Amino acid sequence: MAKAYSYVRFSSPEQAKGDSLRRQLDLSKQYAEANGLELDTELKMTDLGISAFRGKNRVEGALAGFFKAIESGTVRRGSILLVESLDRLSRAEISDALTSFMQIINAGITLVTLSDNMVYSRKTINANMGSLMMSLVIMARAHEESATKAKRLAASWENKRASIGKKKMTGRCPEWLTLEKDRMQFAEIPERVAIVRRIFDLHCAGHGKRRIADALNLEKIPTWGRGKRKGKGWHASYIDKILHSRAVLGEIHPHRIEDGKRVPVGDPIPGYFPAVITLDQWNKANSGRVHTGGRTSKAVNNLFAGIAFDGATEIKMTYIDKACSSRKGGGCTRYLQSDRRRLEPDAQIPVWNYEEVEWAFLRVMNDLDWSSITGHGKSDAAKALAETIAAQEEKVQLFDKKIERLTEAVTSSTQEIQPLVAALEKVTGEKTAITAEIKQNRSALQRLESKTAQFAKNIGAFRQMIKEASQSTSLDLRLRLREEIRSKIARIEFRHSGWPRWQQTRFPWLNPNSIFIQFQNGAARIILIQPGKRGEPISIRMVDAPANQQESGKAG
Image (cartoon, rainbow, N blue to C red; front, side, top):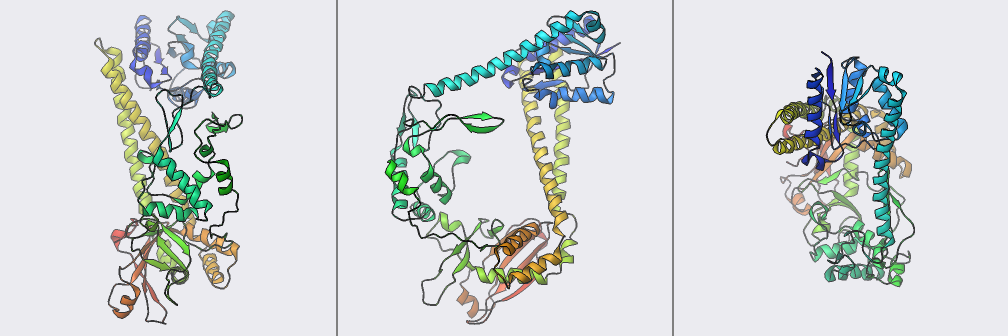
């Protein structure tokens, strides 16, 4: 008995709610029974929600698996592939569609289209050239239909752009506006428009973006957006985005998606949105003549950028370069401070003298017994990630079994199959989601293992950089040193004891401040910093991190 394989595909998940799945499966089952064929139930041959227009189903999914099975010999010569029609197999351009078609035929597989009972094989094609010509016509028509749909969709958007003055393209608009119910106009949200105008007024008056953000946070003015898009407090970067936006002038620049990227279309269109700022205000804010007290630095001031966190809140640390005390002779000129200050400008937040921190860190890194770190072995994080991937792959196998059972139930059921189709769609979606997670985790594991491999290299060169950095402020040297630190250190947490420095000096038994260091391979150490008496240097020493803090990066 010859073995038959049924390939089922539709391009949108919505089609699963209709009759497409049941119809395709029933046709395959009926044909197999009528022609004495054994219908395969092992090879997964269902592509749900995968398009064939650009050959995606040929590259990934069940059809790709079928071609691999042909190459490996799992699907033998003389087998039969059942499809509802040739457009289920491919809707790609005729050259690509014909390549896939002939690859099946030349492998000795007979292709049967169930909607018209056409049989394609080397024998039938060689005996009747007309059948091949017919297949070419069908494949060309399938591609033309999909291309026409794509053109119509593109034309629909072009029409929306052309009638942009009569009706708005979509409801998407700046956060200070909302689309009216008739979709003809955007309306201002008064309290938000007032904030936009205030931002421009403050900036033109000489206030920097960070200072504007601090003012809004201090007044606890809610940020915009919904759900995950809603920011936690105002950021200087968002203030900058508003100041540079042409939407405040009422302009829009339409885009289209090409190869997954946004590409501008035509020229910007004025008057699409209500203008909330005058052109003079916008020009003044973006002229570069607004003096905000900032300055451009050509030095690498902060060696810990991106890896430094506040141990109490896990909020990133920010580098500040200004006097941190108004008292005569007091305070530091460069320091690290939790970014919590931006969210709560009036909160009492400790600062860390940057010169002391950098000196202590580099001294410890230079004196460190690196063999005790590099000999830490494989990262626990990598082990945990590998275990997660293994567990996820087991779930995928369970999903495959569920899909197989549900597919069989749909084909054999004589009752209402809609609940079964819904269940099949749900399981397929869950499998797709966890497969994507596995891909992400594998990439993360690969990056982690790569970091671990690089971690132990060039320790001598690292020490030499530290030595040179103590004697030079070379931009190139500090850039290389910062990158080397990042290649070896995954995270640094600054843990303040909670006591002012004068109390720590007066009462030496109080806990010293500490810096928790998590290395790229999972090892961890703690630098204890004990301030000395007035005029005396700080004292430092390194200790092993407790076992429960290895890999965790959590403050204890």
